[in-house]
Image (cartoon, rainbow, N blue to C red; front, side):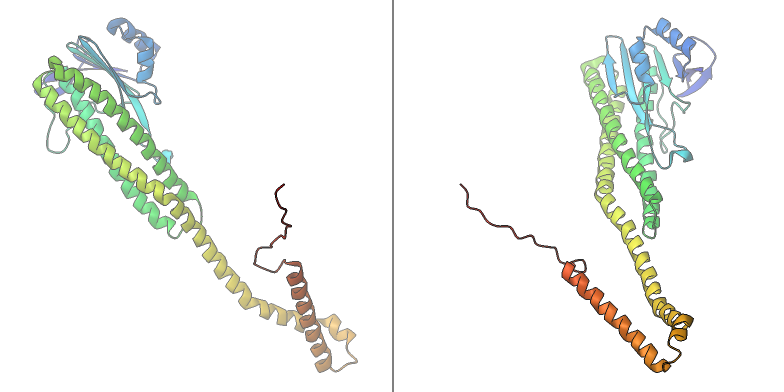
Length: 325
């Protein structure tokens, strides 16, 4: 799908004209790809990189063009199970034309807070998109922090791996975010070097400086979150294991409580034993039975002790010392 936009009154207005200064290609098909290659002299490799989620951010700069492969947060859906991914975007700035290649439909320019971006040229549109991307990362980091707190509450009482796996997904997402933000920073540094030589207007240079500062702060925040997450993953896994051990301890206590009752009920219901000892006083027969049980228990404990099976101490193996030759 192809959408065209005109810049009017500091905003983007959708236009059907093929000569619109801003052209947005959303998940282009084969025909639209061929059109891109023919009209804007974009090579096949660069176009494929713009739609490859594993491609690293980079900037190719010439005398009258800037080709930028940019990483932005992917649109999240509930089926992702708290995994936040990143996607690639292609931004091709050529004189008075900006071509944007997106993997899915997203707003090209949004107001951040109370400040609306100043859109006069296509360069302003590109910089506004980069600025909005950085704020998307910051918003996603806030969501990740909030989700992690909610998952932590569930892990505190959980005895299964579901919430722990979701926490692993968040931790992995932060690693991808760190890599993407760092790659974006390298591309911004290259564009900034180009801009400092007077190739971009002063207002664009100031906007680019703000984007670099915001991107660095975003990277620092993601780095802190990633460090905290990775440092606490083992502790969270131990917490789930401890919850399971606590449950087993409670079940063991319940079993111990009912074990004597079962034993007494079993002994009292031994009809065969009463039949075999019907000629003997029940006090003597049952006293002998209890005595035999105690003797068997003591013999079993003695056997386990001698063989080392009942000892918690490690078994030491004696070896003979030989002097070196």
